[in-house]
Image (cartoon, rainbow, N blue to C red; front, side, top):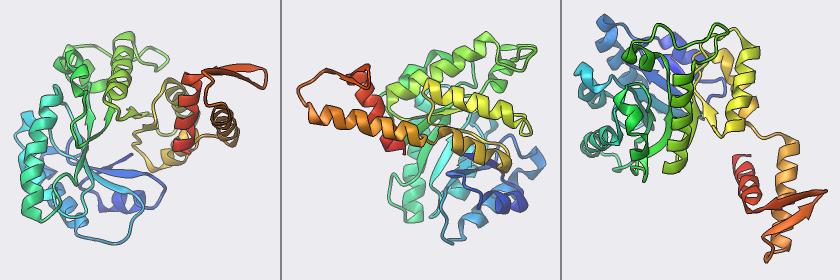
Length: 282
C-alpha cells in the first residue's frame, strides 16, 4: 500500500501504474495545515475519474482530535472509494464510529452499504496499546491492521524510537508484535509499517523478509521505488509454492493422518495450514 500526498497530482500519477495493490491518498501527515482543504478537494476530484485501475483507492483522513475527520469523509465517500486507512485510533470503538459515518455517507452517495473497507494504524497512541485485543471479532468493514512507532514515541515522550543502527527500540518492537497478534486474532491482514529510508534497498529487503517470516502479509510504502522490492519479498517463491502443493497433496492423499513424513521431514496440521496460506497468497 503506497502513501501518496493528497495534494500532489504528480505523485498520484506516478504511483498509479507501478504495481502497488493500493494507493493511500493522504489527507493527514503528508499535507500541511494550510493545504488540507485543497487536498480534500483534489482527492474528491480524483475519485471522479472512473478509468479502469488495478489497485484499490484508499484515503487516510485526519484523526478525530483534529476536528477534520467528518469533513474529510463527507468529501471522499463516493463511488470509486475502496477504503480508508484510519490513523491514531485509540481502540475498536473508533472504527465503530467511523462505520456509522460510512453507513450514512454511502447511502447519501448511492453506494451499497459496506462498500468502503477500513484498515487501521492501530499503535499510534498510548491508550491504543491497551486495547489491541478489542479488534476481534473484526468489524465487518475491517480488512487490515498496521502499526507505527514515530507517533507513539512522540505520545510517550521518547527521545527516539530507534537504536543507533536504525532498528526499533524495544517498546516499539512490542507495538509491532502486538499489531501482528491483534490482526491474527481479528483474522485481518497484518501489514508491516513503512521503511523510511527509501534509498536503502538492502535494508528494505531485509526487513521485508523478516516481516514475512514473522507473519505480516504486506507492507506500507512511502516511495514508488519501494514497490518492486516489497512485492518480490512478500510473493511466495516457486520453491515455496512447490513445497506447499506437495504438503497439501500428501495430506489430501492421507485424509486420516494427523502427522506424516515427506522428504525426510515430519509435517502436521500447522504445516498444512501454513501450506494452504502460501497457496492462497500465491
